[in-house]
Image (tube, rainbow, N blue to C red; front, side, top):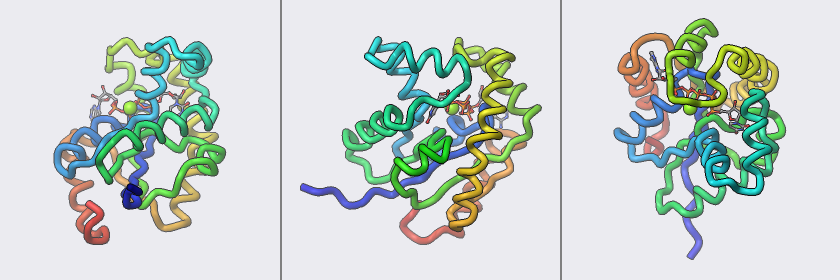
Length: 188
Ligand code: UP5
Ligand code: MG
């Protein structure tokens, strides 16, 4: 049986802006399924899949994995879920990602100053290969160069909702909750 078109929210923001943290709270409150593109890629590395070594070296360099690889992983994850509401975290990151991915209903953008992002990522201590000062600098450069065109695109289509990501985790979630009350009914 064909499923109803799912409600898709893209969650964007620089490295350490709090995408994953806020997604976890949205899941609790609104019953979305959280799909982190970065987590899917890290899972591929851990499972020694065919693309694992390419993905690992790309993430170490703070660069972007080929669109087809990421899109396939996200698609598989969505298809294996019974839910019809998804948070796609950390995707799309480039204009190429944008062309091959599907159209979202809503795009959230966690806007955070670089200094704060660097501080958060360096404090995380969860053994990520890209959480070191050299790779963080590269991730920030790639974000500036490749993700901004994506953010601007969604801004122009009217789908972008920007949230100031400075403050406590609860402060930021509260801003999000106030914002969703302005969204169309049934969406959140
Ligand atoms: N923290 C969170 N909120 C806080 C707050 N309000 N105040 C204080 N601290 C706060 O948060 C980061 C840290 O800050 C945590 O320790 C948290 O407790 C604390 P988190 O919620 O993890 O932030 P997030 O935005 O998710 O940061 P993350 O590092 O995951 O973002 P990235 O976008 O860099 O990482 P991602 O996993 O998405 O991608 C990693 C790499 O994969 C990319 O660099 C790229 O190489 C590759 N990739 C692709 O190639 N294609 C894709 O489509 C996706 C990824
Ligand atoms: Mg994350």
